[in-house]
Amino acid sequence: MTRLLRVLSYFLSYMSVEIKKVVSRSDLRKFIRFNYHLYRDNNYSVPELYPDMVNTLSKTRNPAFEFCEADYFLAYKGGRLVGRVAAIINGRANDRWNVRAVRFGWIDFIDDTEVSEALISAVAKWGKERGMTQITGPLGFTDFDPEGTLVEGFDQLGTMSTTYNYPYYASHFERLGFVKDADWVEYKVYVPDAIPEKHLRISDVVKRKYGLQVRKYKSARRLVNDYGQKIFDLMNVAYKDLYGYSELTPKQINLYIKTYLPILDLDMVTLITEADGTLVGVGITMPSLSRALQKAKGRLFPFGWWHLLRALFMSKPQIIDFLLVAIRPDYQGKGANALLFSDLIPVYQRKGVKFAETNPELDMNHKVQSQWFYFDYVQHKRRRSYTKPID
Image 1 (spheres, rainbow, N blue to C red):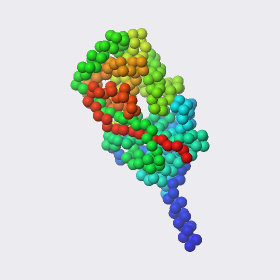
Image 2: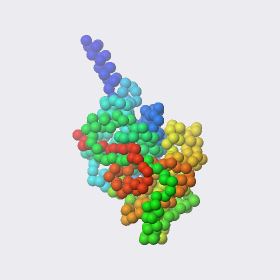
Image 3: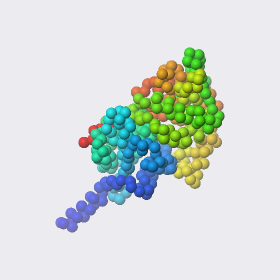
Image 4: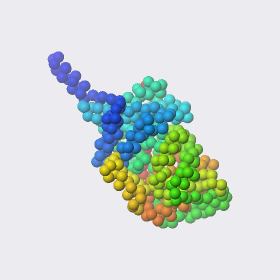
């Protein structure tokens, strides 16, 4: 009888969920690659590049660690890696919104409730030890990281700025007592055959009434020198009241300027300024990299770079991503965005673009969504963040 109990105890221990903190490069490699393995055969998931993930999660390379702290956890069951999660505290966002929240991010798990519960419990315990009273997510360090669990649109191709997840994730969170905290929606916006007549009329009015003008660049270096900092300053002003937003720091802005602005097709970048050159609006779009990233499978080498280079510069894009559309608050609702699209639509037509993918937009942000009403569009995805008190 004693021997039987020992065998049973060993079996139960072997099949229980074990949570391990990421403490080595090998652990971090497993953390990143778990997503690749879990979605290896999925046609809609778009893997993040491994070097980008290393930089994002590195406490010495990511400037968000000026105001964030984080740890990462792996879940094992039966000796097999079955889940991962990041535990994050964004002190700046907590101060801005007067909360004591620990975020869970980059969460993935097999369809096993013991696994998801163990991962969430690890984050809650980690947060409670640091004085947090609620757990919220999925969220990253900042708004530049993926946000929300996909709850609609499982048959739609993902984008490079979002993550895909299986349908069972939401039911796991709800079973654990989470409730909705915020929803984001995403749209396909189809390129029209001609600039909408209303856009043309509004563009003419705002030019005459406010003295606004379209500004374009052919040199990335000049764009960076003239408006690199100002674009992100505008973001901080335009987005400051959005859910969970924390103001970008100078180090973050410098990183994003160096990372993103030099690789843009400048035809797809439009600035709106006042007569004296003061920036009041920006639209940054680029060819979709979703299929290229799928072909790269998270790797730049040996051939991942070629797929990305081809998508960016060597082929006519049928799909583009709206990376950033921002209008200064005092010009929102006054037609400044009509100027953006009056300039960009002919560019899309010339390049053969069929439709654009928007970034996730808060479902209550009707000002942003109203700009699509003059196009053929469809809301095809929805994401959700959840919250609950820490026991």
